[in-house]
Image (cartoon, rainbow, N blue to C red; front, side, top):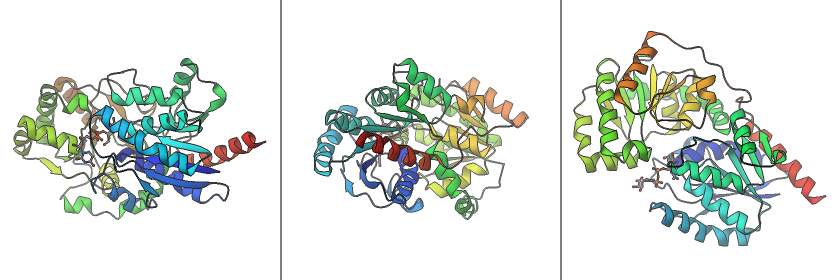
Length: 367
Ligand code: UD1
């Protein structure tokens, strides 16, 4: 069974890593890895291939950054000849980035079955580019692999045939569990002169937070207060760096005495940093899941989450972007620790389950 596996942006790499490993270990699956080039900086792409030992992509489409329409169109234009030449039995996409929908659409139009890993997540906020990518990718997928029960309910509500839906756990957590021991060896705390449990980690990159200077300035008000008592490590995403510089807010951030600004960090350093943090503040999707498994309190600086299990069972609180609410939630965390549960099937074996189901599905189609 020949499977083209697509990755393009940073959060895809930790999802594709365990899948490539599981597929390569199965004699019945011949995997091919395509990198769209949506993310291209070494710190946003190559560092993850190195840390996670992902095989070099068989093909790199080298699309780079552009508006949504142009980026999506370029990926489609360059991916179509790859699918025509490779004649795969399936195209597998992960997550919700532009590379996911662009390659998914190409596969569906060429009548190649599409497989979506991390299907069914919904924030119910169509102003998020990822939400549009999720809904559309799920609508054209033949096999939908889901991380949490809410995903199944969302897909069934949208009329997806239940026989296509499989709850398999979380491939991002496969990667976390497989690398915890190695991450322990990271010297990132020494390099940044940090004491465990005394600092926070911050990530921000959502357009809704960093593209509007008023929203970004409001978030900085809260961060300014928090860093007075809890030093904050902030690896700055390229989109955020650009906006901070354009709006003049970079100077304000640099003037905060306990705000530690860094380049985007590699996987192992970031995992070690999160695992010893007193709190994580983020607008990322994946980090809500990772902190749930690590048992580290997470404040999600967004109006919603597509990952409700991290709130119901994990360490996550969705606090929005208002400085008052962020500070209130931060004080609650300092007052006491929560007892999180690890969600069902987030056990490091999701990629194995996916490989198994793919082979069974392929055998049934052939018979
Ligand atoms: C993309 C995903 C988002 C994901 C995020 C993780 C979409 C719609 N968004 O957002 O879901 O959470 O990746 O990082 O697919 N840039 C660089 N170097 C790079 C890549 C980007 O400098 O390697 C800069 C460029 O100025 C670019 C900007 O970052 O214009 C945004 O990149 P883009 O891929 O468009 O979206 P992200 O914000 O990274």
